Image (cartoon, rainbow, N blue to C red; front, side):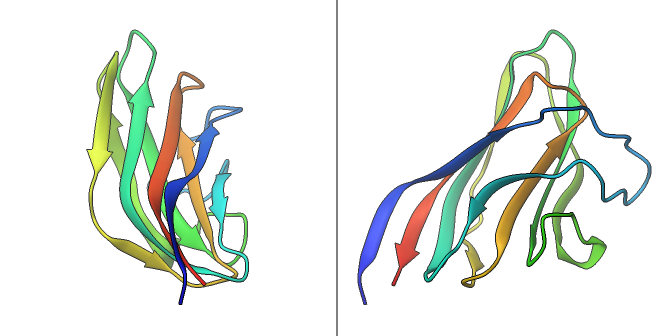
Length: 116
C-alpha cells in the first residue's frame, strides 16, 4: 500500500446555511476520496469574520449532509480565530468530507493521508 501525506482539500461556504437543529442543506465538498481510503489527521475551521460563526462537518456518500453521518453539527468558531480538530477520521473511497457554515467568512482545510 502506498501512502501520501498532504493537504487533502479546502472549502469555503459559498452561501450561508439556515441553522435549524440537524439541518442538512448548504454543504460544500472539501474532499472526495476516489480510488483511495483516507485518514484525516487535522481539520482546520478558520473564521476570518468579526463575529463568531457556527459550522457543520460530515462525511457522506452524497454531496449533502446526512444526519447519521455528522461529525460536528453546530460547532462554534469565534471571530478571527481557528478551531483545529484532531480526530483521526477515516473515510472509504467514494465518500466526501462536507462542510457548511453560518457565514461566508468561514473556511475549512483538511490534512491527512491517502492510502492506495
